[in-house]
Image (cartoon, rainbow over all chains, first blue to last red; front, side, top):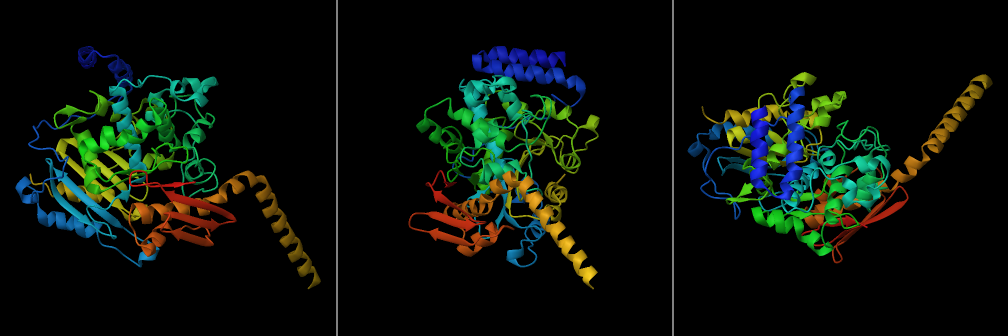
Length: 408
Length: 104
């Protein structure tokens, strides 16, 4: 561990710039926590391959067999994912709208349903949170902010009492300690996500986020909270002009990786809704996953700073300190605005998708919007859907079927 | 017979008072919640039609809430969706190809 820390430190010193210092602090903190087990550990290692092209313009297509995959087995995936049951208005069972599978940098499978096609964007819900993560990586690389900075530096309403102790790092790792009640349909009256998106908080979602009181000290408790990424997106707004901010996701991310049709809705205060409102095609979602698969590089250029994907896929230290409720225990583990499949033995948590590799990380949204990034298989899976009966969709089985289509 | 009626009446009163007390105790949450029906439906319909390009029928199927909506007006010229429900009204407006819809 000392060696890795030394290596990381050396790396950061080599990078030199001020902006890397913020990252370094985070990485060193993470390394320190690794005494506790998986906390502070990332299983991320990018595929060691030289890319023969980049899909900026579009994905190149290969037959599954050209990459040692089985079309027949992918057909079985299709039968599982694309068989709709019951009348449309009842919205029962698995309701896949789009599926794109990328293997070794090539598109080997795609199919659309529900009126969607390869050019039609789909609401990604909480997959948006991982886009917020990427913009923070880019902003950190530009030196606009440091991950270890206190959040109030970028958001005046947080300049009060213990709220001053919240850092950007806490927010990215869903560990601010601010009150949250993340339910949509189960307890609609008390849900902070409903209130933020549609009622009390909808005009200025960041202000709503910042107005919450603490349920735990910052950094001490992990809790998935949709207001948090909106606070981050408002803080980002305060590091640039309004015109620059409105172009920022396109100039720095979408246009760079060729997400031509991406839509990002804003609240009435003009803040991008970082929690929920990115729209994209599955092909473009796969490009986003591919950026992370390739350690934040694209066409030979570094888009996200060195170590960013590792940071994003490091188990949040606050997660380890948290006594998860039964519902949270059924979910994946958490990094920084990305979900992880690593499993946490000391918390008696097996990987949530046991038949998929432990290094898999995911962007996951309401009603089954998903990007799966699997570095060890050099694979990205992008999925859109309208699957409201969550229990009807066995994601582990779905992933196993896809992975089983890869020949030995 | 009279006794049963009396008991039923008392029970009914208890239920009414109980509901009243619950509403009073939770009024802040309830009144904050009332715009949910129109706000969510307006946003869902606006994005479904103007961003995702769904047909009106597909948009309605997708946007259907368990909350009552009394009217939904889609203005294709100005690209707005105005919805009434639970005594509140909300409008979502399409802001362009990059920015999609926002509830005003």
